[in-house]
Image (cartoon, rainbow, N blue to C red):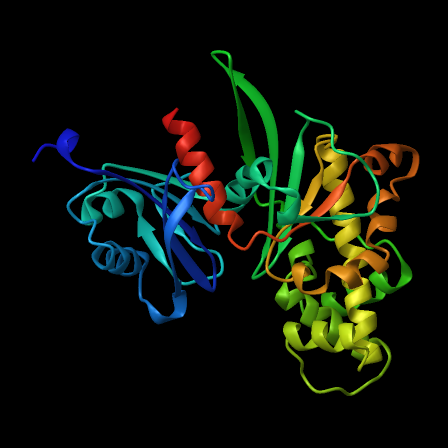
Length: 330
């Protein structure tokens, strides 16, 4: 059977450092994707192994597969090496081994950014003031296994309005201390790190490092807590140190998100993604997140006008990968 005679399947994936989610993009679905499956990366030796399992389980091996894979690392070369997972592979090898008709690799935050224009009010929560201006730049960042960053800008191609994403590794820029506790945390981290980036504070590991730093600063000997335990105890009010840790995390996140607002004058909004922040949205609302977001000196009017949201959609990576692939096919 010729390729043109085969059923076309739009395979999409959201590949993180912990989990990989696979699905099929579908213009007939309100959610833009169907047949979702989630796998734990640590249980597999390679990406090919996971995707092969999905293709076999969905009986789509004998179809014309166009794939768009969103992955948590740079995608500008044939050899892909994941930042937070010991997986390395060749894009050309992936195409050949999986018998793909086409393959598009995008950064995971390109996918999340592409999902933003499709979000309904029920898929996001507004934090603080500001109002969205249509067809203006958008920024997104997300503390998770690492710290993802992307910007989205509107473009017109042959009279068709589309979105273009500028992805990068913005989470790895140098951390800039703002208040006295920031300075002390930075000094502590410099005793164990040669260089401190924002990701060293704004990630699951980063939340744990802020906690360790605060314990050391105040001379407290505390047991080692995970990021989930720190946020849970902070929200419940069971631990003063955890509350202070999470409060400082929110401050630093506000400063970083405000920087993104300034970068492209993001009147379309700055969005917070990732698996961490949705766990404590009410805590974030009552924190100094928005105050630090707006505290940009003589240019404070820019972030003050820019709204901030937490993305609550469960699968923004898949939604965005579907949007990217379907927009490209247009």
